Image (cartoon, rainbow, N blue to C red; front, side):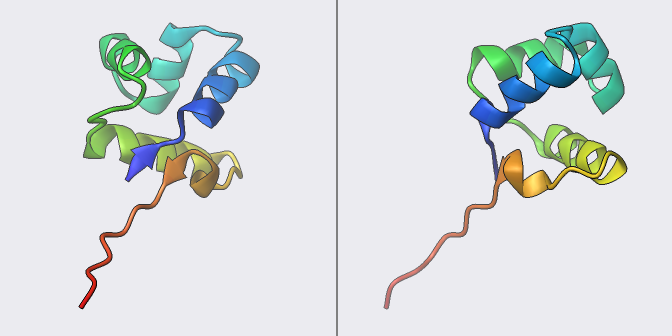
Length: 77
């Protein structure tokens, strides 16, 4: 799974008025974690962060698929 950074940054801007501290608090992660995610464009976001985004979406009637890319490894025969 990967974060859809375009949608995630839009959420930060529109829902949290670009307030990283408020977004981090709402998600239940540290501001440091959020800053690293933004700085590295979502690379290596762990289970805790992905889970926090999904929970936030469920609690606020957002479709988490707009914010999380579900990536499947497809093996070719």
